Length: 217
Ligand code: SIN
Ligand code: FE2
Image (cartoon, rainbow, N blue to C red; front, side):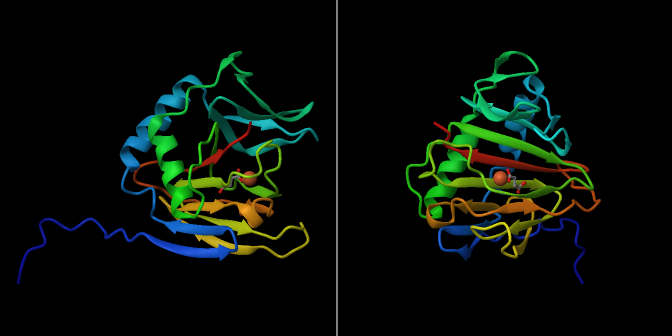
C-alpha cells in the first residue's frame, strides 16, 4: 500500500469542441496561464473596479462589468456604446495586459481566425443568481473579427443561440479555463448566460468572471 502524500493535481485536458460553423469551445485552453491571467485581472480591477451598469431601459444589470483596452463597452440610460474613458474615473480604461492579448490571439488562431488583434476586453463578474439575457454582440464596427470569450471561476451554463432570438439556444456548460470563440458565419449569433449557481472556486471565490475580447474599431 502506498500513502498518497502528494495527491496529483487533476489532469487538465485541452480539447476542441465545434459548436456551429465558425464557433468552437476550447476546453481548458486558459488553464496553463491561469495565475498570470488572474494577477493581470486584479491589476485591471484595482484601477477600474467592477460595477453594475444600468441599461437604456433603466434596469440595473445583475452582472458587474468593467473593461480594459483602447475602448470599453458601457451602458447607461442614454444607450450602449464603446468609450475610450471609464465613466467612473473619467480616465482611459487600463491598458490591455499582454497576457490577455496573447491568450485571445492564440485562442482565435486555434479556432481558425489567425491575426486577431483585440482592442477591447469586456470583463464581467457573475455572482450567484446573476444572468445575462440573450443578445447579439453588434456594437462593434469590425464584424470580421471573432469574439473570444474566456471563462474563469465558477461554472456556468452558456446559451448559444441562432441568428434569430426566437431560435432555441444550445446549453453549453462552461468551466474555469474554457474559451469560446465565435466569428465568421457565427459572429452575430444570439448568446447569454443562465443564472449562476452558488459555489466556491479555489482561485476566485464565489463568482465567475468572463473576459470577452473584441475588435471594436
Ligand atoms: C457576453 O456575452 O459578453 C458574456 C458571455 C459570458 O459571460 O460567457
Ligand atoms: Fe455578448
